[in-house]
Image (cartoon, rainbow, N blue to C red; front, side, top):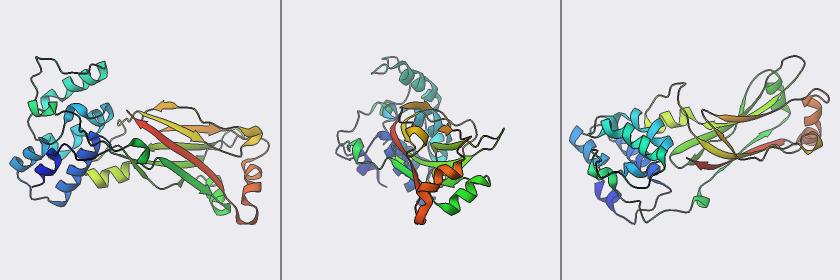
Length: 248
């Protein structure tokens, strides 16, 4: 078993979410674990230090964790976290191991890849106009995979170009072995920039979203094809970029 590794205080992680992610990957690769071994693994998670998003979105759906003792106390812990209090009540009836102190070996958040981008070329424009979505590559951030995609929606002679940042369900399902429903939600602060738009339009605001957050720009005249033209000349491309700032 790997318990001793996760109990070492100097283990360096981005957040406690990452510990759950690593343990879930270990369980996925060692499917013969007994309930007792899974319980031992669960005792290596400082559950009180998980983000609200992980407590709400991930933990109740992890098969290996769901059978461990203390799950009945998870809703109480989520309320505690949402209230912003720093310590559990002395009347806390959940597992004592969940009170594990935050790890001292915390990696700097700035060392995580956070920027996602989509390069749209001439062929991609044809796909967008035809209603297809263009996806970028997923990046890992504090226990989640994120992806961004762009697509167009034609209505009333408008051609909105939309770019969205969302938790990547396919990557998460593969890594954690869970199946998300449409009711999932991840609170994310992020910055979204679409350069080269008419009159220098850009969105670089910090927003909060659930289930995916995005930005639309509507084109009447010039059309989106005309807007893209300067970027597509001589085999060029338009780059759309987004940055995950924080996962709450």
